[in-house]
Length: 454
Image 1 (spheres, rainbow, N blue to C red):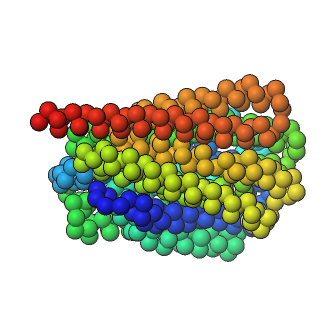
Image 2: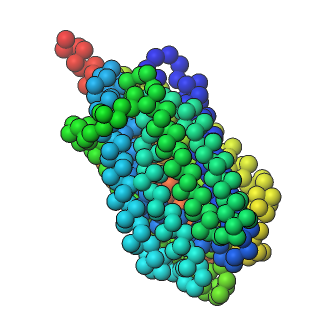
Image 3: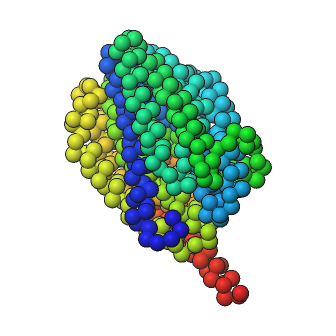
């Protein structure tokens, strides 16, 4: 990451991530599709309504795992083995603790929050059942995410791919067994997810214990080291706050969509189902572009730790180019093959129309989201995680809230809700790029000034 051409390395780093994340989305899509096979009305939509609320809680520890990625990669760039080891072992303790807290919070608030969002009747019952089972596995989801962050920080994206491919197949197999053999519905899908995440944590942990490098996991070294924890919190907390705020704005949007559903098809779930299916498919485009975000964080962090500020400019160019190409390609594939893909969800006509409306409005300008992600990743790699969070807060979250409270009531149409996404992505992407390039150039000038002085 610190020497030679970058474009090919960014691609080689991102491709296993893309495959890994795409498999995870595929398995999540399989959850909905197989839940639909249970013939329980509203099963697909009930899972879809839980996404924003679950992400609100999960993004807390997901943010700290970004901090782990940044800190471990930066210490590798500094060539400081002791700091790397301390950050690895401290981060796993942080992961376990945050996972336990998130599990407790999720179990307590799931029902009242889902009801507040507008879920009612059988949809509320199914969604509550799903989330309560899902949250029992959150400590394992947290630990597996921290372990994956450590592998990525040292440039290993192949190991998570292998492990998650295996446990993902286990997830699908358990889905089919619980739903088709045991006659379960969303509860069977939730238990399959829990079991798969337990397996992922064990396999990733065993693999890291056998690692021969500076990131080797040794159980006797598991402790909270003050400086490592401070760095992880400094770089991870803003990312967690940003993710939580995004989820809050998405919860408001989800509530608005549920309101449209309750008004336009009372007693049914067509709009909820269509929105959930489209969102599920968009996940494939998101994880592909988010893989380049992970690359931008890791490459920038290592070069920042090594003091190679000019090279960070090349990292930015490579990441923007790769993520732009991926976003255009992924969006085109989803739009071209939308009919057979949506057909997998067994949607009613109104649900399919809703899904298609959302996909067109979201996917055509999807490259703006990709650029927003890369800009955020570069800022985090430069040690400006708080700056990235503030930009995202204002450019996306605050903007969407104002849009929902003002523009949506004036127009009164569902499509205007979805339009808030690409507009906010564009505003945030431009601001992220401006700040990251300005900060990078300051470091370049400061380094050159020190060289001249010496």
